[in-house]
Image 1 (cartoon, rainbow, N blue to C red):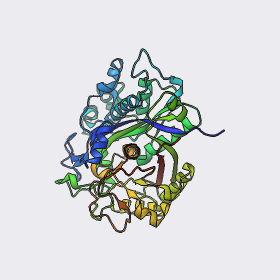
Image 2: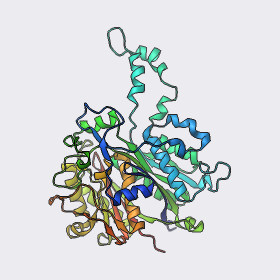
Image 3: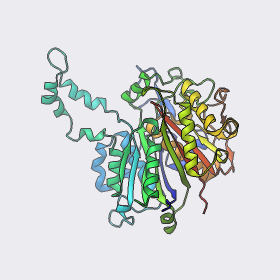
Image 4: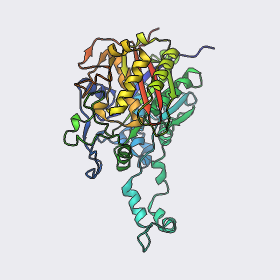
Length: 440
């Protein structure tokens, strides 16, 4: 039995350069900068004091009135994904229980939810009160006092704010998705893998529609600290945040934390056509591999990326020469970008890699790790549907060693038909998605 074709019929984007896919796309096309001094907390003691930050939004605008009490249990990662899901569902023209609780028009059993996420950083202000109550007369933390007095300072549901599977849980409950639900945690490629899982869930006929994508916020003390301990952050541009992230540039000096969510509606082609849905693009193939010598390896394996690209292209029925745009991970790290570029050149071939337009977007939004894949996929999908390739931010002097054709100016009317999205995470995992312009 042949697998069903899977298309993208809805996009919901929450990003440092815009809320909703229209603002996000306008931000990409105007090279809007979303990296600025950290405002969420006092970052003066950190080496990196800048980040790609989402402007404050009211989550209550994106959830049903009867569900608003649950907003208190949503950490930023969760809130951004929930808002993105609402935007995506509405954009797709779907009427779920979350849109109209009394008159839903989507079969909940045929609706799934697969989300990519990361470890959610706890709110230190909330935790500090409980910890303070757990310090004994010798100024030492006491587990006895923690059980006796400390935990009483936290609401019984406190932990639910910080469980990574809550992105899928809240979205599933709000929209009454009773089909397969899954949460994938694999660093920067969490969303790539979640989208791949959604693709197979729809293609195999288990559901007709799947809400997928991912979200993540690294704009918190613990989020910044974890990246800083890995020596991945740019600590030299606090005074000029707009110039900090320079993917594949010869003067690149590291990434900065970011936050955001990219949520998509993946749908069976016949189901989408049956309801007259707008089709943005078709997800044609995906792959994920791991190749490294250590789980702590930060730069990706060039061989692993090349192998992943080859597998994704094979599954999509495309060849390297068919690719008309590459969306890389491109964090702006000295070794990371070099290794990723090498993998892309190996996967596509030297001649093709040096000529195909390559668009890294982290120069304007920062590295939201698990959320980055969602923003990358949104950029790929919109490049196809809008027929434009935006210019990259902060890559004025492309690194000759990387050897990629970084887009320097907006290319209008280029009509890319096949876009390759590449990602990797610490430990040698890599992933690739192949997005195609829909054709009957």
